[in-house]
Length: 125
Image 1 (cartoon, rainbow, N blue to C red):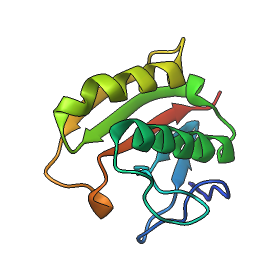
Image 2 (image 1 turned 180 degrees about the vertical axis):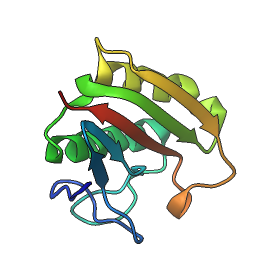
Image 3 (image 1 turned 120 degrees about the horizontal axis):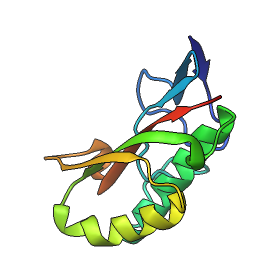
């Protein structure tokens, strides 16, 4: 296993790594909408938060030497499933034309009371 630390992603807010590689697979920790420069949550609306989460995911993937086009599975955690259509449109644009397997669930609460969190598993050939 190899620990991945992404210099362009926000610092971890707990005892975890940005990602871990095991063989050809990269497992990312969940990313929430933290600004990497300030370490603070971005605005409270789902669009701004989703954009930041996707940027953080991309930064973690880049540090591991892959892109969103190599993601095989993602899990999206939403504070409110009513946010799904807006999150989904931004998610689709970020991964296009690729369509990894995905699960999306509503949860009772996310870290720092964010609206969205995304984790991914990617494959490096």
